[in-house]
Length: 361
Image (cartoon, rainbow, N blue to C red; front, side):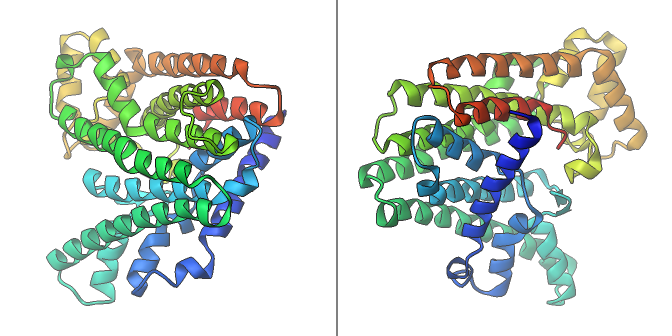
């Protein structure tokens, strides 16, 4: 399968998911106007829709009908969206996907449309973003129920997926987010690589694992998390999820800002504890360590400081090491697919895995 064909297949799934999400029956539920606009804000800007894709590919790979589970693919896209709406508040980011973050968009609307003062506008923007995320979380659950109501999926499986997403997955995501915040204030030398990788899995890998496992169980229409095919695609996506986050960290340092849609170097100012920084710090001499300490986590770091830090992360081998680590995770992930029967869906999963570490945004 050529790479262009894979990207076309990825785009087709995204179009189906977004067509479903954009229907008027959903839009009419979100009121007033600022809630509707905020709920759809990131969807209008577009995304890669990698989680819906792996859910649909996993369904097909075990012999299921992907057309029957579009509501589940849409649900995981919206579930992911609420997490990044809230994540952007935590990170105080101003840009996402080339546009404004939700809290910044509605801060500006409060100033320009509602006549609020600066403090009131900041509070309004954060409030709308929090409420939009709450609405999206409820919407995701509602779409999962449609699998039983309209698609003849076993209701016990639907209940299992709702419980799993709302407790296990969400608990892991929140733990990972809290650890990310806490680690950014700890001396980098006090952490070990395994702690950082565990945090990355909880922030990112667990939702990819859930997407693939859900797709496979929906494909066989049984509550069988221990089924050998279900376990295979779950383990595959779990490792790919870590690789995705490692690549994300690399792009946050050396990526193209126009392609990324957010400022390169923001992770440095925020003091994010990445494998890149950890490895670079281990390889650094005393002077380089002092320089990294002075720049990472310093919101006043200017462009010159950021460029210095980026050069150190390159020269000290942190970026190259992280790239190799991500490739290793993908290699391990692909081994889990060996028990799947040959199909176009198995090929799509393989290409999806490679895309996770080859993407530029």
